Image (cartoon, rainbow, N blue to C red):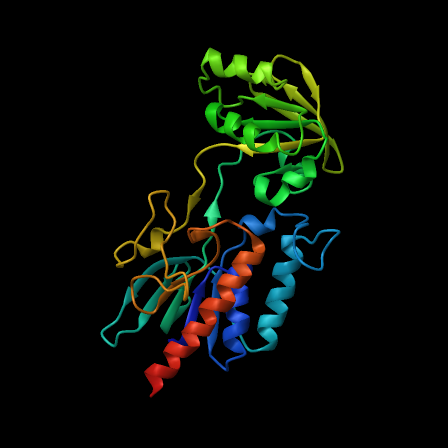
Length: 304
């Protein structure tokens, strides 16, 4: 059976759920379609969010957001959206991988987030979000005066080290991807007291996710307390919008109206990490609320 919604949200992370909650409180019929995964599921302790000084996990926020959304009548669907199109009535048609769900909607929100190129290193999944991080803006504070490694790819790792010197001088750059770094850059790192290793990481030794040692392919073990990843290849999941008149930034993010979060295609909004801005939970929440307010205005106009 085909169900028509006021808004369908593709992606049930922080931004998508915040959008759904705000719209449902506007008495709108809302569905969220989501597949398990996403950046927030690996974040074990956001520590820069108002009211959570001891940290809060992405899983906690998502679980709480789902409960709150359902309280207001939001329909949550676990499935993968594989196709978006418009029908002769000007509504959006949403096709899913399972083929079970057939949805149409007057407005559409993309909250699909980003995918990161995580390395296959023993112990990584236990440490990420606890003592291994991705974003200096979010978690640079966690390295203050701590022995910290940057595991990455050549110039990307060197650039990350430059950012982290603000927080700690006890840095080691590990060129895990073995992308060439010129000898002058290596020499400059040494002059600044930054160690450099050009070899693969074999294993991360830790205690309950707290990093203790990094084992290199040579057998050398480095004593560290924190690490950051610095690999190229993270990309915004915007493939569903191919064929629609939306602007994609050169780095792959969607360009939206900064006031409304609407794309150039009428009645399609984009929120969260697929937008062109700092990738922060608090910003994702703001995106969701802001987009929902303007979606409500649009729906009211359509009803007049």
